[in-house]
Length: 288
Image 1 (tube, rainbow, N blue to C red):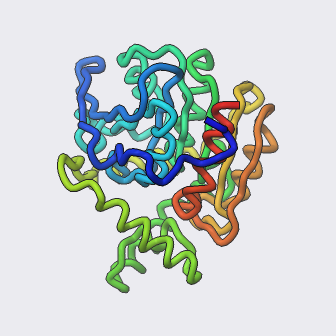
Image 2 (cartoon, rainbow, N blue to C red):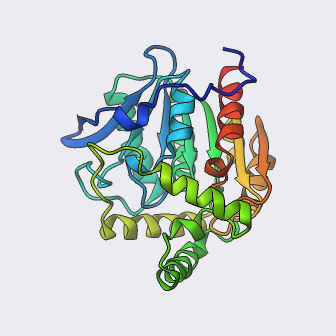
């Protein structure tokens, strides 16, 4: 593969047909999917607040899986995974580490989106030897600007969606420009491509736990990010209303070995709106 080029559009549609597997981790069954070629350092995807296996953009997952082994999973209490959803990022990181270890991996690349980016940072701080590289998308550091206000932001956007009879992600993930509205329609359409074997819906209890964990992350004291010496790609949308883009800039400033990529006229779901550019950049970063 030439790392500067994105996968061809003819790449297999892994997301639509990947089987959902389970594995017991400390007596709790976790649901996951394994996509792409075997071998090498796997890429583990860490999902956003209230998201399950089916809410990863197929263009992002399949684009990476065309070249790398990809693992997507429901953390404890999410979707089809058993157990009670933790109310702290630290506990979520602990569970993710146990899941990764249970699969037999001792070295992984992490792609953390939003809440998943919080978890990725906690994993790198807790068990740095487990991580090779990280991609942190639409996320921020502990104590980051505006993160503690996520409950209010989510409530306003859900109310707006209800009043306009639209999907909440139209407002949570995308701008309301013509390009943003078009990207939202296309993204929501892609999420329906998988017809059989879909994941269990995320419960209100899980969403509530995620909101509490995200708010607590925004209120806690900042971590010493100089301890994260791994190469990190930080990605954000310039118009993110959920996790303000200043957090992406702050991460890039504080991490010792990072690079920053910002997408114009893009919101919280910038990596989905600009999926071709994101996949090409992420693969180049992970392979170089």
